[in-house]
Image 1: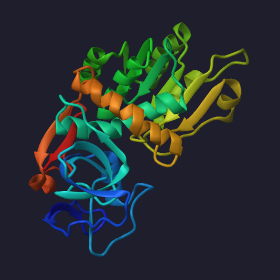
Image 2 (image 1 turned 30 degrees about the horizontal axis):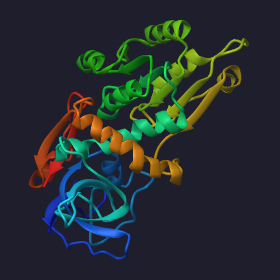
Image 3 (image 1 turned 180 degrees about the horizontal axis):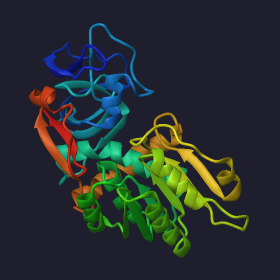
Length: 323
């Protein structure tokens, strides 16, 4: 079969022939792959830099962790891969499949799950979002941030504040449901004053942080209390696009009612993952099929994998490989 194969970690995948994967137990099924999104998770695992990266395989391995495909009976599903998924065939887990509704394209469906997991899991399980709350999304101009805005609005957020560096994309986020934008291209003092004014008017209940790094330090400085009673803020780290390490003063933790947690592979419970597949993903696929959730994608054929792997995608689009 044709596949996107990594022979040496750190190198881009090759468009090559690779042995078809083999089913090894009754919880596995072979599907014909139709579309796969290229995510930061997949790039991190391919480079060996992500904490869930596979061990080195001298014979190479197929990249990709999930896909849209067809079962033998023609049923169209989203599924998590056991084998790599950017290939003509993949072995997937039977208990981690979601049947797709009519009205959603393969490419749109492929683009959604990583972003849905990267936002809905944090909103539902780490922050416990309630209708009427104020949500700050740090780093919302990327694909996952755009999805997070829409899901937060769907879950009842009353006010959504977003940050980012791409001025044009920031303006577009207002159309997706954001209420206020903060450009991270401004100087620190201006950014802090903007967040302070918002936090004073409507206390920030939830922070979804896709950037970490210096912008996180600025947000924490705004949350710092002065000895009086403070509203509770649930701060969830989801990504670290601006740096993996920050300086966090102990006085901030002591002076404010702050819940600090992370959301990602390894942090979710088995029950939460079950709900992702049984409730959250089906609901979000249906919203997209009804054109109530906007998805920004760019499609390429599998044969172009070597050309597109390191492509910088503008305006928060997600690259999708079609097969």
